Length: 390
Length: 158
Image 1: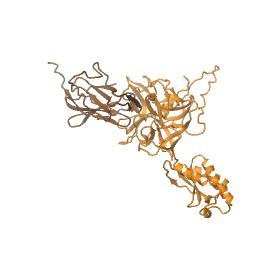
Image 2: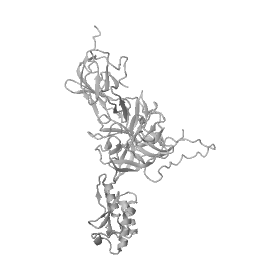
Image 3: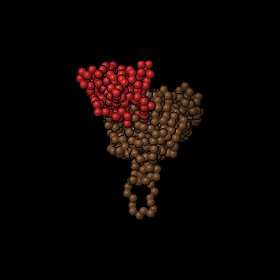
Image 4: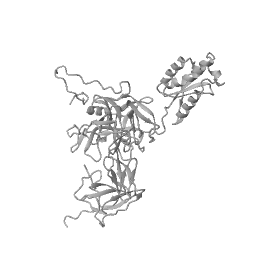
């Protein structure tokens, strides 16, 4: 029987379950337990049944997004855990190929299992959004991985660089520089300007607090994934899975409703938009950010030091999310954060592809060639939504 | 930017200066002090200094919010009403700075307040209570309150 039920698993159970499954295979020539007989197909010979038991679990668990596999002696069935219902069809295909009827197994949708000590502050390879990064003496959050004309990169805050508003050579580590090699180097951090429309006298302004860092060759990164912790607004840092960026909001600068973030200090937090497309002064500086959005969850600490760079997103269905921007600051109590919209980020850093899908690591198509220009164009990194080279 | 340092901003009180009270709670191995004069005239400005001292014999790693040492100041009147808060409504960059303090090491930050509240009016003469809050990774560590007397400006006609 193919059934889909949800069950929660805690960390470390995976090892025990897999171990139990392996023990079932230790003696493939052992006769089937008496309880097997009523539910296993009588059409299978004893040899076929032993072959099935030795093949089914390894072959099913080789499928992507499977979580566990074993044999339920009480019910005389194989039982497989999968991350989502779509995987059940793949399990069905494998079991059919092995000669098993649907009554011989069941499939349960379950949470993926991670090592107990996987948090937003531990090593993640491939990298994904929401995890800790370190440069110099500072700690921030990796916002989101992107494909960009300048190469495979991630986006974080402009103030998460050695010199805010100047493209330098900031070197990033994940999670820290202790025992790890650099994962990326700062590639683009546009200057703040006095003459932006709407910029107050005495201030220098930008539309986003965002910078791009180019990955080192050989550093694996997952485009379109954001680390998901075990609880919303709990402060948990334990990673339990991932959000999938199934879409990105390239156009809006005004928002409403509930938005979420994942950052290395307060984890997964959410709140409601209180103000949209407002000018915000950066405390302790002469910097001003134009057309930013504020999100609040009164009395709940959703942002603290270290959460700079958190990806901000809207939940769609399940764990599919729409990326809307990058968090850069908050109030002292931590129940209000401010973020720069993705639209503004792309206006300053150039077009990015942040969604999940095939083509991870491939660059967006280069800007169109000017047919009237017979001279070969010099190499450039396009900026702005028009992909204009500077 | 408000709080521009004035010419008489300092980093340490002159030894034996009676205007300064250096009492503060000892928080484990860390002592956090708010230094300020006991009184200031209404037409002047007051300089606050926050000192973070490692009182232990071991190296301490402090995770502090902001690119620079960031602290709030809270001023209350005799009825415990907050009349001014330095970081009220402020948007503070949410990065974390690791500061390693050697035994006996000290971090210092200053802020000069022009005695004006958010609406721009000067605080009237009277007795007020001030404390600072050091912004760390997920907490705000307060100093004990100290008294600040704001005196009337001198009569221009003598």
